[in-house]
Amino acid sequence: MTTKLLHLHIENGVANITFNNPPVNVLSGSLMKSLKEVLHGLSNDVKVIVFDSANPDFFIAHVDINILDEQEVLNELQLTAPEGLNIFQAVGEMLRNLPQVTIVKLKGIARGGGAEFVTAADMSFASLEKGKLAQCEALMGIIPGGGATQYLPAKMTRGRALEIMLGADLFDAATAAHYGWINRALPDAEIDAFVDQLAQNMAALEEGIISTTKKVLAAGFKAENDGWAALAFTPRTAEIMKKAMENGAQTVAGELEIESLLRSIK
Image (tube, rainbow, N blue to C red; front, top):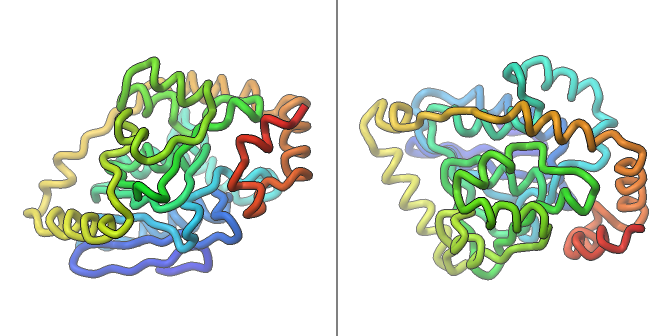
């Protein structure tokens, strides 16, 4: 199933899902709904799912700042989310609980909810030249609400997780790999071949190996959601979001330097 926001290609047990939500691939309610429909529609023959982007500069920029305009879609997503999880956490846990192994091929920027998507995937590989990650929610007056507070400390030291979330800076792929945020950082000229071969190797495994190996525990999400919700709907947060949009958020120029843009908001 291919939609206007996602392109799906399946070959030899590997599903490649390409995000295409111009201009900067924000994580909108519609994109999350399309993703859920595509993933749930995959056949049992699919053993590996590789995510990439049609945009060379952005994997997923971040959650759409205007996402509340999609209230009907959000309500639908929340109704089907696991108990105790918000819709953003539900995306990450969906990736982790699928019977297939999920791989992100990161060739652009992923911030906020986009970075959480990368972190939630079973594996992630980034281009040394182009892959970048950031949890910049602190600059918006909130904390991460899509799993980062749980996923990051499981991948790295507590201090490094706090540096990522409270420092709110953009990390290059080499540093992200060194911290344990991603599996590996590879030269851009090599990443496609590497991920393709890895996906093919795993798709060739005997039936049941991948789904049996994947065992995921969801712990601590209620605390994260409570903290995020307490900050996400304050007047100050609304003011920051409004000024961010006025100053160029969700434009290509604005998103390339979003940390500086957000820091300039008073």
